[in-house]
Image (cartoon, rainbow, N blue to C red; front, side, top):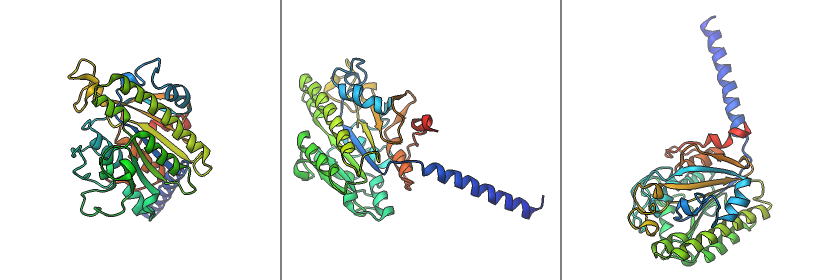
Length: 316
């Protein structure tokens, strides 16, 4: 075989592989993505309780409709701002947990706005905790104050203080029910975490129940909007857990590497996601934005997580 012939064959093989790759990437039906972060429940009070006492909707109604990762981890700092920053940027980093510092890298939402020339309103952060307003920016000099997603964090979106989850949910449902819902949204609900820190066991458990109901509400809103139905993937996860019982002050706090702080959960639902699938392979929070980027065919070079290919294995 001459060099010219060999070169032509390799070129054709490359075109075939590229075509196969492109065909594989085009298979995703999802166009919209929502990340719901239930702030700070311990796994033992959620899916670790086989009776699902406090999360009946997640276990009995939503889990059969999606894929559940039972070994999902926060492998970085187990605090609120670092946890949410990992979900947005695809890297772990030490960052002020009181909202006084910006993430080191641009977020998936910023990459989306830049690459798609999208409006700020097409990628939104709606959070009960005002300090999460820092997620809308980065200290990276090439991205700072550019391509920023819309941020509505804290009471009335003031970017400070903490607001009740019920008011946050009003904003979330209003946004997702509209004629032009955002293609990307991150939602934070604080009730579980706040009452854990308050050392109020009953209210801590009550708020796990409330967020369980809120998760179902969000899913139902997605199904009720013709723009979103059968086109939206919902990721339901946490930013961190809480100290293992008997370790330090137990459910009251979090922030170290104990299993209670690191072991969180992930339930994914959407048109591309196999139903009633449970995966025990370890996965971690930085995998979520990388997976969304792949499903959106979006460049995300600074994300260090991996694509959760095992989630789609049943559909191959």
